[in-house]
Image (tube, rainbow, N blue to C red):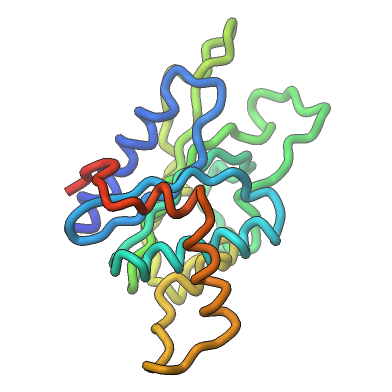
Length: 203
């Protein structure tokens, strides 16, 4: 899979899913060599949510022997320009209730991340909304949030996916984490997504 081409394809998928909606869907796409699988994500709000979905995506990736996992999600960010302290800034800041300054307030952002064994490809887009109905009608790329990282140099906000490509245990060896991964694969929302049928072709 050509990674720079794949991230462009994923951006197209993410924007098509969000266009016309009140909120962009939050989802992961597990990309195996032959087909891709959609996993709708219900929440990444808390650290516990992120830890759970980090395990689910690792289990799903191992299950279909995938070499890449994409994550598409909306979030608020105040990052408008590239800063050296980007790693220290959370890409999921809450919106202040009294924030109405069009130039300085948080940006309603669509994030697209492609995780491979060696790199993290990250793209961010401001979501443009219809003033009357508040539905998403377009996107504006945020250059400061459009960067490619070597996996070990990725910002800390992606750390919940740091175990995606951890090696499988030796044959006959099983840990509590591996048993938890196996249980996660049996959850209806995961097993349905990984049912052996092509959900969306990206290559």
